[in-house]
Image (cartoon, rainbow, N blue to C red; front, side, top):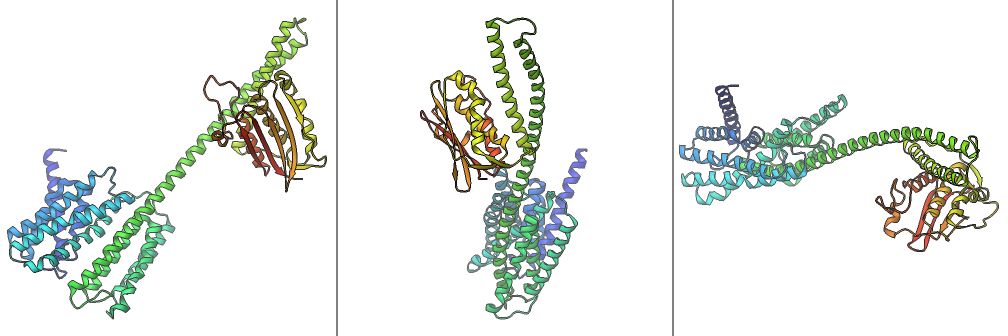
Length: 538
């Protein structure tokens, strides 16, 4: 695009803004302006603010030209019109500059901090600039006397404030792209809301005036509709509904109808605009709060989906890798068994010792792979359980034989505390045994040679408690809550003393939950640990 074309487009945009500003200003000045120029209904303040926020501050000449022309048409002297135009332009430019200095300010007003910034900076503070410069210009021109200064300033400021609170948010919010397209059901609800807002507003502000004490409470009938709009349609619904109510309210009040009608239009508009200003600010913040919460909820759901997808990919990867690792392990185990049988000739004692070490490490690695597979199945929700009534004494009686090689190697003593011969528990026998073997594996791992490990069971209400106790190193109190996290180990780093991948307790906890029970752990550093599983009694 050539420079001439760019300049032409810029001039056209300035001209359009100036023309729209004049139309809006003339409409506002028809509303019983104080001193002929300070009106309580001033849409141009919102128009100017939104235009500079959306298209940039470079369009400020459009505001200057429009304000100057509008005041000239109203009968202001040239210098007065120029002073008022300068004040109106400076108000919008300063407001936009201040808002842009706020880190992360978003003109779509979808966050509470953005809405509050607009209310405080643009609606409350920057409007004092135009009111002060404008009324001072009128005073020095002799149009407004000193006794009229405060009343004129108040009307000017309130009119600009309402324009910034009502028109600017509507333009800003609708200029931003919607986050989601409306479904037919949502469009139907929006239509019902629109009809309700228009009908209720016309009923309230189109009724012949009565006594203030009787009529004033009716104005609050629009609040449920504003709440509906904010809750269901967030910021876009809140600002649009507030704007529609305001237009109907100003029109009805100007016609001498509604709860705010007074003998003098200026007094009527002052009471009305005070009410509308409070309501507009309140529901602007409410709409922003709901929009912010919905956005956070959507982001949380998206993050949850991503985490679920990543977790599924992780589980699939672990399952595949575990399966692939089992294949060569099975081959290693088979060849070791063949060599141990002397298929390829007799073995020396040194060779048998080497094969025994190979078998030990093969079983250890196979146990780790089994842990990973169990964890994957639980994570994927593919855990299959066969719940039946199990005799606890039978389960405990099988444990010592399964862990005896480790007990002998570490010179640990093992004891099984006697329990009631008829003690029954509702559980999957294999999963219960897996839980107890995980408990025992941890107990033997963290107990020094010469220590002791014991198991036992007891009835407790409607549950059965089966426990494993050791005289090991214990767990620091600040780490107990984390030991059930997958892959967590108290000792971290490559120089840790104890092997393992940190899945045993996580699997045991999940298995117990799946069978309607829970796992509890008590530990004292330097004394030992007692871990137990509680399951429903049979």
